[in-house]
Image (cartoon, rainbow, N blue to C red):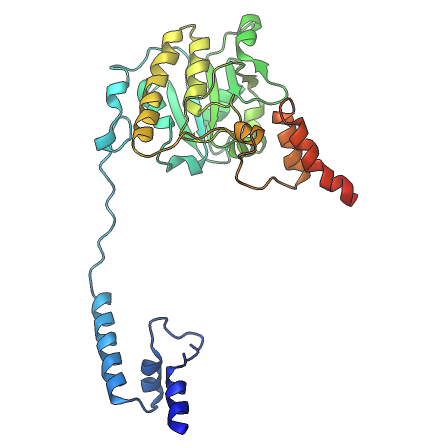
Length: 313
């Protein structure tokens, strides 16, 4: 009985004290404390330690990024330059892209494609969350000019096409915020500089062609698409929109051919009961949903609000 008890004790795992190495075995611990170790177990533990020590001495090679195209910023093997215009488009409008830092390193971002289609002096990208007169005097000066617009669908935003018909000063500059809707909202409301330009929005019936990335609604457009529509209106040239959308269409087509799936908008998924995530219980988020989907999701909103009514909140 005692021999069976001893064998069972040896087989039971030994609790690892705080600070002990994860790779340290119970036998190695006993050797450090001077406890008795069976000869066979000691030899096996020493062999394991020797092999582990050898692994630590192996050189670690840094991960190598695939070489990128200097124009479209895509990996050279999937370069989209054949779908870009041979020469930058001739435009008179200045475009400023205010890019959230989280968008800078995304693989399927559209801003590099947009910048590759336009002259360098007409398209400038500003990366950051907070901007001020001291940190960016150039942007501050641009925001205070009477000919500057900011594309943001706020409560005070005017339809771009209607605004340019009645404006005494024809717009020369437009600012577009690049990021998710929550990121764009944070940048707009926490930077007083962006309150100076006139707010405009696009009232268009086109659906986003950026189908490999989910959009909140069917009417939401990517940054490249917003710039394409806005510039075509300001420049009064539909060819600009067609040219800027061509590399985006090629990007989505390539991704779909290599395993990507079409990402339907949240609006579409909610309408058809296909949205995989649980609906928010926060009243602010519910009011946001009501703002965007009130025309088509009244029944869903009633279902979401009913728990609050029953609990007396």
